[in-house]
Length: 115
Image (tube, rainbow, N blue to C red):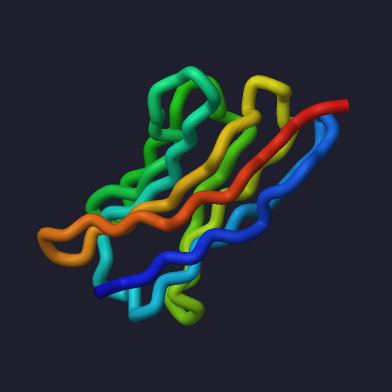
């Protein structure tokens, strides 16, 4: 069993920045697939950013140029740097990682962009 713990969410004004963290309870050195998703009220969950095959990175069109996904294997952590935040970025953000054939999810962290 793997636990993923997200942190870094909160309330921020439009144009502001936040960095989300997702810490895994075991080494992520060999993990090739991981990502960040979000779910806004009344909407389906959508993928925001993902790392595939170890080095291929994909972003949703709505966040390209504003969000950056990265990983720190030494800390077993994946990050989502979010800049130029907009009210429409308001959602619960979840990270996931694939360990073998099993996908694990974090509990989610709320991001609210509002003035």
